[in-house]
Length: 586
Image (tube, rainbow, N blue to C red; front, side):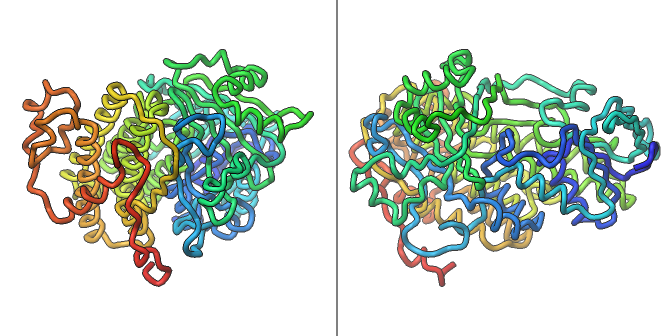
């Protein structure tokens, strides 16, 4: 690179967000001239000290399919056996006494470690090294290079100017687009004053060490060990949960473990876990079995790293601009690591960016499209935020949290993943065709999350243990398998509407269970899922009893979901029909 050069796109930051944006742009528009300026040295170390090691269906499918990374992912990363949750149950001294929710792999061989859609545990060092080395010739990657000044252009044809310090030498870039992917340093976000406070307040610490911790070995109870045909629970992202916190265990493909403690700042104090010694003492008090297993794995060694992040949620007032700048990764919005959505949001953000940048470089006017992209992105972020906001106190209530896990899975697969995998979520033109469905989903999501919080405040959970395989809940299984094949726009609109019927039916069953002490609710023939609340003073004004006529599908889902509750506990579920799980049927 000469002292002064011209680019189509300059990406500040060469981590996961910046590198994947460059790859997606190059695949969508070959020949696009891109410069990536990464402040740290490359290649990064194995088990690099970064958050974002676990991905689920949106991010996994985006990496696998859109970015054409299947060969690397399947040979160099670790296929993931879904998300696995351990609620308090009858006690935390023995993991077999907790309520477990997660997939059981014991029936049919399927492609991705027992799952039908790609998801992975990622070694970020490995992945980012591969991405940086697999760039086309028109993409330049400069490590130890950071922006010292950014001057945004004024006018549709003028170029932005970025001054870089590359290994001690000053270089100037004239560029049509500039994207901030600098993570928490948020170089451009801070310059433009785009940050805003989040109402979700949570903090985290995490560390890594060599070796494996396998929850499969934590109990010798025969019922516990017999739940899985193979002892591969450890390939899931493990969540150990209780009121106001959760602890993650993520295996990395480089034979390392990542362990994190995530807390609600209103329930727990970050100062109690702010270094490794205090974190282990905290685990001794709250998750003694986990602390014992960590010490056993470490022996006399120390963790490879230890990181703290106070109040990690971040929000921005704007992510996309028709003035040809944007944010991606942690430089933009980050909501919460629970449910592993970090790569999801990188994929969503970068897909919006790719659409806008390619259209602009091809000579289209993107002013209106950029505004609509921002509008729909903020809607998506808000719906995910509702999943997490004030939800951490629920994590100590096994019954309520299990219902929430089921509902959140339905929302994720039946709405967000369905739309993204079929190109609708990041296409403003398509989203403009489903305004009623978008409004309906927003209202149902808000009402259900409100009801779950109210229910947890009212009810002490019954003691319980056992196993819930979410794929044995036929409703969730059907929402999941419907994601396998891509569909056209008309079919997508139809499925979105049908899935909303399913999600509302699930919502009604949960609401009736939560409101079982209210005779008026139990006797009602119709309920409006957009008005659910356990506050009776709101019912008439919100139109709770003005629900639609029930369809046969609605009744089927309601009757099936009722099987989650037997005598007030979550100790049995209705099995899914075996014919629906056959390889031929998929």
